[in-house]
Each structure stands twice: as C-alpha cells, then as structure tokens.
Length: 141
Ligand code: HEM
Ligand code: HEM
Figure (cartoon, rainbow, N blue to C red):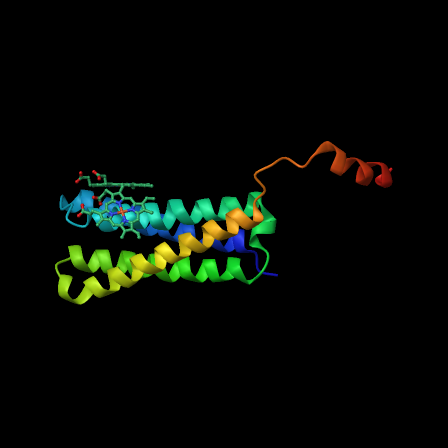
C-alpha cells in the first residue's frame, strides 16, 4: 500500500536535486537572476515537502482518510505551478507565467489551510491521561 509520508519524501528529494542543481548552475554562470526560483524550489519543494513527510510519519493518524490525499495533490500541484510560474517570470516571460504563479500560490495556500485543518483535527495537543491508558495495559498482561 502506498504511504503518504514516503511519497512526500520522494517528491521532496526530487525538488532538492532540482534546487541544488539550479543553485550550482546560477553560481557557475554568475547569473543569480533565477534566485527566487531557486529559493522556492528548495524551500517550498524540498523543505516543505520533507516537513509534511515527517509530520505524517510522526502522526500516522493524520495521514488516514481522503483529506490527507487531497492535501498531497493540492500541495504538489500548487508547488509545481508556483515554481514553474516564478521560474518563467524571472527568466523574462512575466506575461505568460504570472497566471501560473498566481494559481500555484492560491493552491499552495489552500493546501496549507487543509493541512491546518488536518493538524487541528488529527494531531492531539494534549497527552493521553494515565488513567485512560491503564485498563488497556492491564488487559494486555
Ligand atoms: C548546491 C547547493 C546550493 C548552491 C550552489 C546555492 C546557490 C545559491 C546562489 C548562487 C544564490 C544567490 C545568492 C545571491 O544572489 O544573493 C542562492 C540563494 C538562495 N538559496 Fe541557495 N544554493 C544551494 C543550496 C540551497 C539550499 C539547500 C537552500 C534551502 C534549503 C537554499 C536556499 C536559498 C535561498 C532562500 C536563497 C535566497 C537568499 C536571499 O534571499 O538572499 N539554497 N543560492
Ligand atoms: C504561496 C506561496 C508563496 C508565495 C506566493 C511566495 C512569494 C514570494 C515573493 C513574491 C517573494 C519575493 C521575490 C523577489 O525577491 O522578487 C518571495 C521571497 C521569498 N520567499 Fe516566498 N512565497 C511563497 C512561499 C514561500 C515559502 C513556503 C517559503 C519558505 C518555506 C518562502 C520563502 C521565501 C524566501 C526565503 C524569500 C526570499 C528569497 C527571494 O527573494 O527569492 N516562500 N516569496
């Protein structure tokens, strides 16, 4: 069965390779005009996707159900559109790529809103009380 944490992590490392590759290309060419694309490929692609992977790994109950899958697709389509749009804009084609960046940023925000709802509903903010756990422990013995 496919796991959401592993899938997010796979996407994250692919963004890391793209972001690092672009950073090296920028440094070699001594042309930093694509810096915002590099920054967002690394931060929205590598760092954010890897954090999503770690959260779903730490709280597997958050990954259960359709909402988490919806979050995966929104986050991925959003990030891809955002970095494509930002790359196109800073490569010198703002009129063609602004729309893509706008759609990407709105989908990215929507993904984070859905993730916020998942975190608030599925990730407990309180420790389970000792009393609640005790009967289960004694039954297991
Ligand atoms: C192979 C590794 C990397 C190389 C060669 C590289 C190269 C660069 C270069 C040349 C710039 C432009 C600097 C400037 O014009 O001021 C830059 C900016 C930036 N890089 Fe990287 N980078 C690398 C890895 C990373 C990673 C791993 C991240 C984040 C996880 C990252 C995040 C950023 C950010 C946020 C900026 C913009 C900084 C600012 O606003 O001044 N980079 N990088
Ligand atoms: C809806 C998603 C996002 C939008 C629309 C957005 C938009 C922008 C814009 C317009 C800039 C200024 C670029 C310029 O200098 O011309 C910027 C810079 C920056 N953003 Fe974002 N951002 C988003 C998400 C993020 C996230 C999630 C992170 C970090 C995890 C991030 C980190 C940065 C950093 C470090 C810079 C400064 C580096 C640079 O100038 O490129 N952004 N962002």
